[in-house]
Image (cartoon, rainbow, N blue to C red; front, side, top):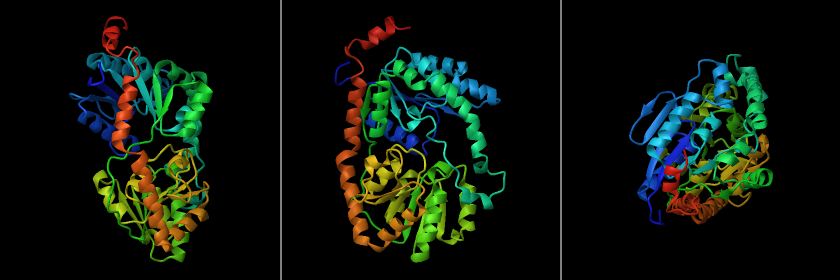
Length: 414
């Protein structure tokens, strides 16, 4: 397997969807690797079973909470057998793990004997509580008890038992260290934590940008949010900030792109705040249409209140020369430099969000300068060809004797 050898790569993810950051990442990287002549396969969990030439989906619905607990915190034997059989069938040179939080041990044990990398798309490997957040109390007066986000504490408290078994008793980072040859993360903070705590082999790679908008346009009336409508994304805080900002600038409008479990809740909250006439909910839209919305806005808001790694929407904003306003959480400061390509705001600081929105809406030259700074940063650091070349080099670095690894794996490893 010399330097020009084409690889057989198996992508694995715990959900099958192109919507969302991880789904989009898998799609664009798979396409880029195929362009280079590499053979790409995908195994993912789904609501249905399906197998085509290059895709295998495994149905993972559970009969009850006990089956779910055993599957996600111990091992799912059916998943293990299906995946193990599929891996042996296609005999990949590299297994490329993405999100594997659901049934992680099943994925790891089924892939034993094969070279593996793991792209860390979130902070679950360093902080098991990264997605347990505080509910926005201002939502409570308007919501009937049936809504999920009022049951959030209860559901998450149940998950604490699973987290104990999964993270502390079985200690996933240590288990992963035994099975994964190399980790990759876009977060410098995560890399430091994993290197210091678990001594793992980990590389730093920012997410890639597939194309750049050379002729960006601005509409200084429109604010843009793109993402799942769930509590962790902090959309309710954005709505409150938008109300404050609009009271001082009556031209402002808010465009919310995306869907999620809290879609109805967020719609009701906009009505409760009496701003629903000025907020447009598009639902999920085709990825190829996003540039139109970036061109029809002047800023992207990322009000997440959990530990984000590097949201792909931030990269997309920079590719469209748009400044970003975000809460200072997770790895966002790795790509958003306060006062350079946008503004970082203290988490939960609604007034800070509103002030930043107003400032950019009234200072068009500053907004365009910050947007162009982000564009230049993205061109220099986030080019997809550089990312693809680096990823292929990481794949090939997994074998000290790269020409003989397929023979060793076939005849020695069972």
